[in-house]
Image (tube, rainbow, N blue to C red):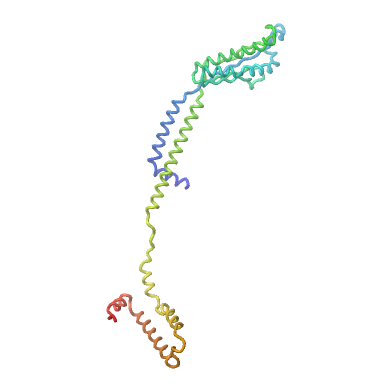
Length: 286
């Protein structure tokens, strides 16, 4: 079935296709309204060197080259499973991502939170920032580093409002639309196939009419062609032996038989089938 035939089939089954599309649009609208968007917030925390490593009156931002490894350690410790479990218990369905900001060579820790509620996303972001700062302090305290020589941190940026993310909502809506249209087309194709099978079963077998020319052809067959095998068979099946006629009598009988056959041929050519039937009905029965 090519494209043109498929379009014609869909137009014939419009009473299935159009209601299916309308129902699909309704379901897609319901899915779009039912699936809530997510709100995403992000923050960046920068690590700064200790004051003892900076010359008096120096700029701390010029001495951050050796802190990238420290940022990796802080990220690994901050991503403890206990911390993530506590967040998911308090905010079901929420997600938190803590990692190194790979877009820069500076020791920047990126924090991204997402939730179905913007207020919950803000609370989670504030708690994650405090968690990263606390992990940095705990690591240095466990090593017994004096406060004057500890690495500090500063929050570069933190979103005050969340960004609406429609990815999940649009994905669900697209799946509903694609599935509804596909089911409508398949249903129309199935109905078309069943209807075609019923029409084929209801049609009678084709009967070929030979027409009047066939009867005329049979009537015009020469009698000698039809009777030749009979004469030949009669000649071959003539009795042989002592009872068979011999001599001049045999030739006389053959001549009489040939004359009878010739007379029958001439009579058959002159008479039509209707006259022959009438003569046969009018002949006396013996």
